[in-house]
Length: 79
Image (cartoon, rainbow, N blue to C red; front, side, top):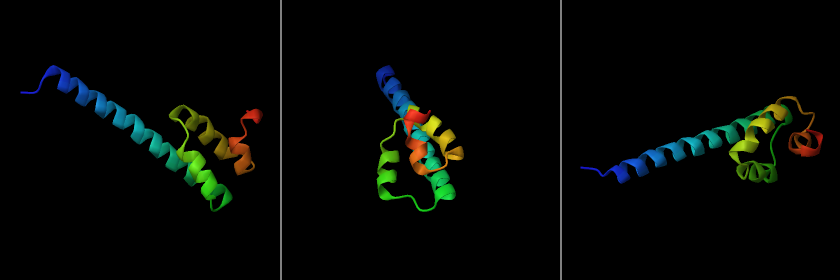
């Protein structure tokens, strides 16, 4: 028999796992878009993308689709 607390911890872990998985998928999508548009992505950009918060990823995905350069994707002063 599993306690209610254990069930709640398990549910919380599943929810957190989904958020982490979604963020990782968006990071991969962002890198795919950058490579499709601008060619091989430098390691420094990969490191930067790896450190992005989930909230930051959506606007960057949109910018990556239309930005004239990789630098413009990350230029928050322009957006």
